[in-house]
Length: 480
Figure 1: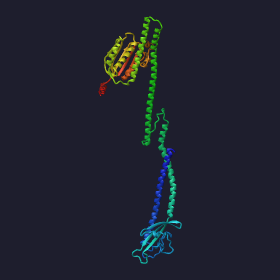
Figure 2 (figure 1 turned 60 degrees about the vertical axis):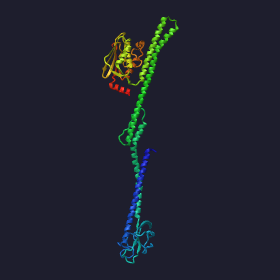
Figure 3 (figure 1 turned 180 degrees about the vertical axis):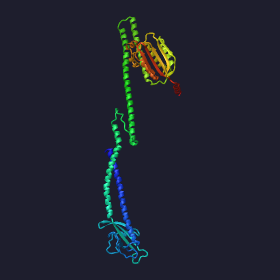
Figure 4 (figure 1 turned 180 degrees about the horizontal axis):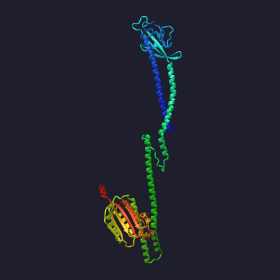
């Protein structure tokens, strides 16, 4: 049985009980009031006779006879002796047991059948007044009746009204209950419909909440749950896309690393195999060893770059260290000065930035090494530092062959080469700019490249200045 049907049945049952109890109370109360009014009338008539205010045997000096009162024989007063017999012949006793059950001074009411109809009978003891004649008995009883024909008609009418109103009230209550159940359950039905239509692709469904009652709060809670689900699904999709991108990058990385290692390994193997399979003179053996040594150096450099890149990617996004730009440039200059005769380093401004001095020096060394590879031997390479807009800017400028525009956006990708033949010939693996970008991003900065074919290249490293407040907080953290 559905909740809607149960709600209608409960509402109808409640209406049936309320109407039944209400009508029953009304019927009983009406009947009681009706009977009480008859009893009061009978009591008033009997009391009036006892006080001599009306015709009767206990009146002032009146003879012992039944007065001609009432509408018929039933409602005419009857005088009874203490033994319950009528004092006048021809009178009919309405309730033979009335005298026996009457208590002194208290009326006794009874309902007895007379001639096929119910009669309400009052039996009351009447004592002789103090100044009454001696021929009047000391104790007498009066018995008066009242037909309950009107009372029976009242009960029949009430029964008919109850039989009509009670089913009608229940039917109306059921209809009202159905209407209220429909209105009450419609928001829940919308929630059920919305919940059944929700999937990973349709989390944008929302319920209209126009009220502040329990159902309105239910809609609001359901919408909040959908917001959380949608946020969770979006975060999951972002994480999945990121994971897929990392997997694709890892696959590409493994493929590119294998490809890069294949060339020096093949060269090393061919050289050593050729030297072992023939009788070579010392000069030829020396040349073979030099080729093998160059291949080993190339592989060692590639492995070192791969390890450096892996180490940077495993570290937090932002470095917790700080270093001086001048210290990083001094360390880079000590490595490059002997290898790059045309190098010129101008450190006009110095500041503290996030990161490690050795890593920042490596980034500068990689940029200078790329500039040297794309410039003529002995060409000038200028490294300078400036402060610009809250950042320390390290600039590496050369007058080499330059880079065409279609390659600029991809510079910094792993194993990407703007000039495949030249870089492979010179031993470059296409990881220098990737390592540089990883170091700069870990310091919270960015790398910008501008170049024109034939006019050289300018690479700028923008590093946010590590403020004194941050240095103070870092010192306090270290102390604590």
